[in-house]
Length: 558
Image (cartoon, rainbow, N blue to C red; front, side):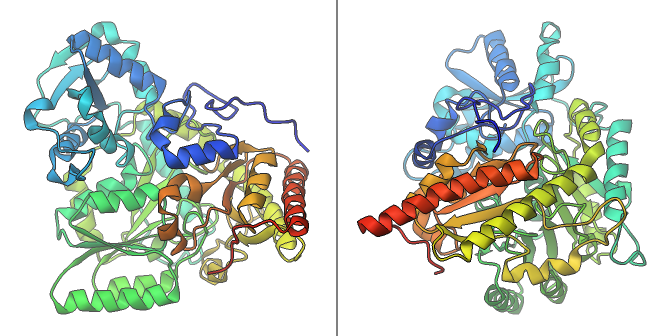
């Protein structure tokens, strides 16, 4: 067993740098509180994922700016590009912000866009604090606000602050395009090429086909917004996805269709939908999917998705964040490859960014390349790029350790699931899921320095809620969102994300008895010891319930 976790509630998970993107939220009682009112709980965090709550450096810069402007009872959101700031204003004013209860569009005369120079140029969207609930939605979902390193650098130069005219064009951005950015592109290109399944497939993406965004969500939101200027047709999300991805497609674009189970039956339904849309001369904007999907690791049938996208002439965008560059080779199957570089590629939970890779082999490439040339604005700050370049140097060795730890824990937990006396009901992981047959063909070739695996993330499902609570509370790892960090993280995903929509979530296999695990870099035996203790605690509760005839909430397979 490892040393008892002592990180206080709301603090960053060690090693906690100034720019940490993690938070520790121990105790099932806090899971319940978070699911009931996430905003109230997040407000108590000292550290958090920056889209959940602006980092302290970002909040400090925003507060200093409001004070400098002498505006009482006002707030601001800060952006590095005029494009993103303008999108925030339009979002806040849109009639779509009217939810019929606590949210209304912000009147045009109560929201302004202003430009400033300190160390760098930045843009402030300023509004009365009373509208924060509406405007903050643009911060949390698209993920295009300033980074904490940008805020730190500009706060250090705040004595040089000057308001400037809003430029007509702000594409000249030396802090967002540099030799470091090009070195990052070269590194990603290397990983896309290494141990390729078929090196004869040409052409391959060049560094000119790799685009950076300020967050993983921005690497979804921005291309989605580009595509909306073309056809404004239905966006399809195939299979379950990260909760904010679902929100982004609901809130942005003309229409959205969700095939949330990602099964063969969903593929049949997708083909029927595509055929119907084609028969009515309606263009489907794009099909998006995660490979594999968060949080149950269901892997979509990529071969059939590619065939459907070709047959019905639509874009196929695949998010490989969980599978990760090192393990899988799928670029050639996509039109756009989406990756949250914040996770395994960065690996140290202290910088956020995402990437999009365009596939030059795709027949959609000319159209996509034209779109990115027209709309893409670099927004990855130089200090973040430098940190990402440094952190990703040991990407392969870290991935080796995380793959091994995840597979070792999965093997142990699966052995318990096979024992009817155990409270462990099921383990979700590509090597165990039936859909894993769609993952295995895309594993990269093994090399002397790296053997590909099934990734860092898995989900363990307990028999009922009492055993889930016992397992979660006893498990001696850090508790909170994120994946690919140095420390193992446990997250009660369904309860935190969908406590108010449990019936909806259950329709897609998501249950409150599931705990998502991101394996870290700890010693394997140490981790196994911690998980054995947690499983034994859950087993004790199961035995006590059986003896006492207690009522339990069954997990089941339905």
